[in-house]
Length: 626
Figure: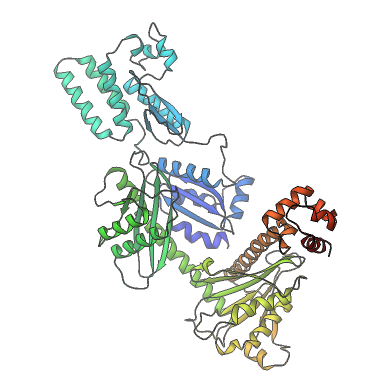
């Protein structure tokens, strides 16, 4: 893809809302996760003309796609950003490897409880969080200490005080260590702190205001002034986070659709923490209402469920009232073996989570529309360049083939498929090549094309463009196979294209070859004169698309080859000997101390191993020395 061309339209659709953005490379690998108060402004700044550091320019040069998730606030964006960094370790993010957990605020269960910070959840006491960083916790503790004057000192320090400390002198502690506050009043302060941390700030403010008015009416003006200062301080405290709740095992689903596409956005909350979300897209096939779509999606989602935290949620929140929620709850009970509620009325944090999911569904659908429109434009340009006679209503499906091996070892062929949805990874295929073990790419290409198309018929879904990664030789083999299979009877206008790497093997130096007409090639004896070299397309979008398809095929072939090669190289030679199972193999290796010792052993030596008869020893010896 070309960043300046393909991502410009995408960036223009981003909302001016807080959230996180994920930058991906050409292989779909996560490069960087960032947060933003304004997603559009922050993401567009990477591609502006401003001077950037060398590292930033290097990052921008690798970006091929950008995914975004809208959040309710910048604080939530920061928490989600840190969650994704810890989970995926993107190479361009700062990884705090010595910090394995989020900080929390906790209140102990002592007679005079203390308030402090911990990392990781604590089993005893009341825990609140998580917070995005240690500095955020320290800032919150400072404000809470100023408002409620709860002690933060360690128990050993608290037990050994005989007079008030400096914290009391600067009005940051009420002095419970030396009895300067009653147990009842201190308990009230602790209770107020808990209510505030639980997100009940509105209720607490009303209570404090009532207490201030009562104290003023009783002419306890000093007490009224203290409560007034508490109210003023609490108004400065950072917003209450939706992440912080004891009831935090929730899955959220929101649906949005237009005339062409449906988008269902999922958000996953575990342990009170938003750990991620995903947009699911589907073409509109039949007219269906949003509740019907949602009910069908939720049922399928949990029937084939791979829970992120190895646990089903306690609650499900949906953006539309389902037609038959009781039936779906019964299905979920059979699947999860526990009751999962589909909530009908939601408040506070769950409402905020749902709003976040709805925003992301709308944003995902808008982005999909822009991407689909750009892809349709590029495909039309490609069709006009290669085959103007091809009807515009032709199915937009391309297939590309590549061969990968190491000097003939573990030869793999790949077939990748692109259509109007872009790369269709569910349709990708890999083939083990058995016709050659000498690195003959021509034979390998002939084999994979034969296996790919020999079983298809007029009812099959055919591509209108087939690309082979290679020059005249590979393209000639492809045309010969298509001739032998008589494929022109199914797709008379099928275009066959070869994309050969240049001398430097860099993008922009390729040579393009095309079979002018499969029908003419089939009628000729040798096919000579039916393959021509093409001029590169004038439109950069077309060339970039072809590079993307070719590179994806190359990547997929390499992945398969490396797996097969590594598996073959780590496989013991003894595993291929008939009659030598795991137990005998283990006994042989232990007796001789390794494979090299086995290879040096004679037939008599091998027969001394427990369970190895002379006949089997002879088989082993011959197998190792052939």
